Image: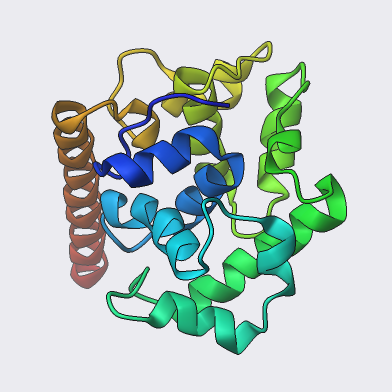
Length: 203
């Protein structure tokens, strides 16, 4: 795996994401409740603070939990909730060590069916259906991992020329379009919630 990604909008961080399967998974794990660029810059920041060029699942899994939480909490913090995310990253790495000998790429390498790949991604700690589908779409659209049926398994995130998620970010322009889409979705959800509350109050 050695591709050019533009998820962090930072050359060093994006270079790590493009060559390290574990960094890409950790970035996806961090991508919640913080800006996308902040999340995907996290793996580079963690590697730097551990004094490494890459992330190593065995090393992270074996870290003292408090010490690893301190790595993420150091200013500037890797995430809005560095303590809880440190725990999730360690759980992810421990799972990879147990099931894939610490090699994140084995989660998808050689998998011939999109549904099977989605199942594997959903089994990862911290990966629900939506996060798994988005990462599957990223694999298919930008990382050259295209097993049969991958687009169907990724759902709407697998659609070509859509701007729904990080899978569609290839530069500043597409980042802006994905961000606009997310804001539209939030506004629609908020409006629907308000309408529902209004109907309940009127009963």
